Length: 248
Image (cartoon, rainbow, N blue to C red; front, side, top):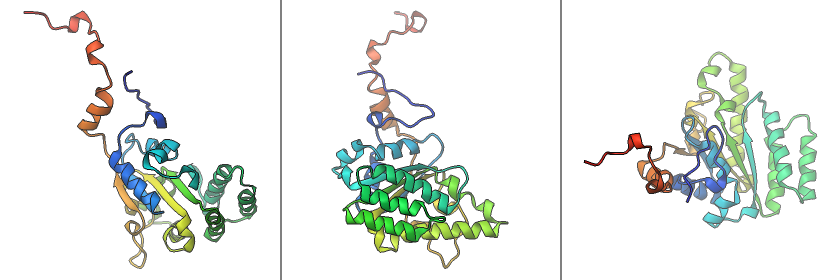
């Protein structure tokens, strides 16, 4: 067995993905129940690799899930943001995923022609997906780039209101509408969602009422031993003479 490969500055290919058993179990449970998960952790913890693994057939086959039942859209958040532009990008990716389904693609095209896209339009698409006994799995990487920090909203009430409207609509779509049974999301951020974005008023529903939090941490020593050190055939490695222990 060759030494374990490392992939700095890019996601690990699904076929090379190892570990994260606890996180994957939680994600499996949420997706299977059309729930919603927020994975948070520092840079380099493997959040993007985790999302790429989730959207691969490997994950679904291992968990006994029906890969064909999901229309999976991966979106790396960033750049300029408006609610309408966000949904445009998501729908464009969804259209690609719906290849071979001319009827659904036509419905998506109708929405993409609209000057402004809002949650009501997305509900229509979800209903179409539900008619096909499928569901939309939305994977949002680096979600903090959209939501922003709370400090950004303190002196910008207009920006705060717009973001609150977008976030409220997304959460309503996820958990309060009938179409929510055809919708599941997994987002990644660098810290807990309730520590990001505009401060939610007491009348609003807190993030953790809708998203299951999972803290992704560095690999344990056991995982390091099993997945990274064990595959290396240390016995076959020849140390240079200067490092070899002299016989007494």
